[in-house]
Amino acid sequence: MIFMNDQKENAKNNCPLLQIDSVYKAFGGVQASCDISFDVDSNIVLGLIGPNGAGKTTLFNLITGVYAADKGRILFDQMDICGKKINELVELGITRTFQNVELFNSMTVLENVMLGQHVITKCSFLGAVFRIPWIIKEEKKARNDAMELLSFVGLDKFAEKKSSDLPFGWQRLLEIARALASMPKLLLLDEPAAGLNAVETAQLGELIGKILNLGVSIILVEHDMSLTMNISDKIVVLNHGKMLAQGTPREIQSNEAVMTAYLGRE
Amino acid sequence: MKQANKKTANLFSQKKIHYLIFLVIIIVTGFCVDNPYYLQVLTFIGINSLLALSLNMLMGYAGQVSLGHAAFYGIGAYATAILTVRYNICPWVALVFAILIAVGVAFLIGVPTLKLTGFYLGMGTLGFGMIVNIIFREWTSVTGGASGFVGIPPLELGPVSFDSMRNYFFLVWAVMLLSIIMCQRLIDSRIGRALRSIHDSAHAADAVGINTKNLKLQVFILSAAMAALAGFLYAHLISFISPGSFGFMVSVRIVTMVVIGGMASIWGSLLGASLLTLLPEWLHAFSDFEMVVYGLILMLVMILMPQGLTRGFIDIYERSKRKRKK
Image 1: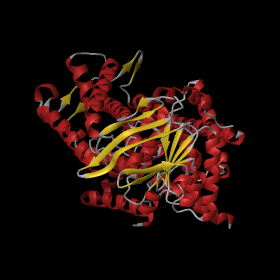
Image 2 (image 1 turned 180 degrees about the vertical axis):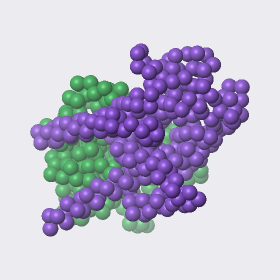
Image 3 (image 1 turned 135 degrees about the vertical axis):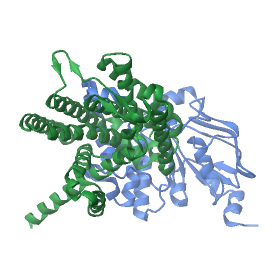
């Protein structure tokens, strides 16, 4: 087993993993996020949907520390994470992937995953130069863990290949493996199915289910409706920077306001 | 997984063999070459290699361009010159101060300038290099001004005097060997991976939790300290320094060594530094056309081997191996 988050702990405290509390963000006169509030419970997949320009990416960037909210709070494990930098968030247990896959292309597949472990491993400048025994041990463990993660996403055979040599779909998987390497509690996937074919999308859905079993919660921004509706436990719909609806996929599918926003019904 | 472990183990022992070969070459060369002029050229190659290696850590691996690297080289040289001549401090103590000063300056300069990227970082470091050079030139009461600083004492370590060219050759190359081992270990570690990741994609480096700001500053400081060490070795070798040895053209030359030798290649620094130190010596025969031929050779290397000499030679080797297989 790669790693396993303790789900009981959060369940015991009976508080959601991530709370978004009346968050507001404007760029000049454009209200990109206006008074958005919802909770992400532990161990669920939350789908974030909405038409283009609805403010999904802004919200994503607010959670991952790219922007700071003008008003409102974002609580992770009951701690306010507003204004924290992305590298601090990774240490707390929030990690993300990118819409257009950002890998380290001059490095091997294995090295890419090992970079994901950066916040877990401890070796410093001096430690590396003097190669203290525990550092060699740490390096070996990091390598083994990275290999296990690679077999988890099914890329272990390509560990020594350059990451840029992989086909696009596999690069996606590699990016997810790298994100998992920091043992996150919350994983944000930015349009993970973009550019994938139907088979690959189905595999991705299966992988997301497997990740859920590790005790990792997932926030998913995705245009592929069938994927989102199939794997999400809860869906939040945004439109024009405002929250339009939230609920189970079934509730959302029968929601009048959502239908109007998507299909333009009068 | 065991296979992966074995691979690491093999890699490490393979590197140990490289170091051993390098050590043997140093010892053999040191004892076989008798001509003091050749020994001096070889010693200069060592100092330049150290400089190139220091910049390669910053530029080749972490991807941060510096066009003012000669400033740190100069700071090392001037610090030891002033401390040993004016204040009669033992050179080895002066070395500690020289490195500390370089580290301090690198910290002060690095915090604001490393926020820049690409061309802008180049401009920032270029300005810094020029300012430091002007200080060397104009602060006559301390640095001796444009006429330079004379009478820097030779190095001594207990009974061993580094007055003779051969001993100095061994000193410089021992330092170089240790630096290579240090840098190689760094590159093969978690820190080295993080450094290379900044070069590949700063975005993704942030996203995996690397504090890129701190890491860039740390490698900048390391690079400055190594350049100051090279400056120290240079000052005590020729016992006379002047601002001209640490000007803009020298910064450019260090960058050229790194690019010609091969970015992100430790042994490439050695190759680049050797070529750029030896070429002017070989090209004396062309007298008036020396610079033209020099420029042409550099252009040809870049056209034929755009990834630098190391990558170029490896490619040629692999191509010939493939041909033989056929």
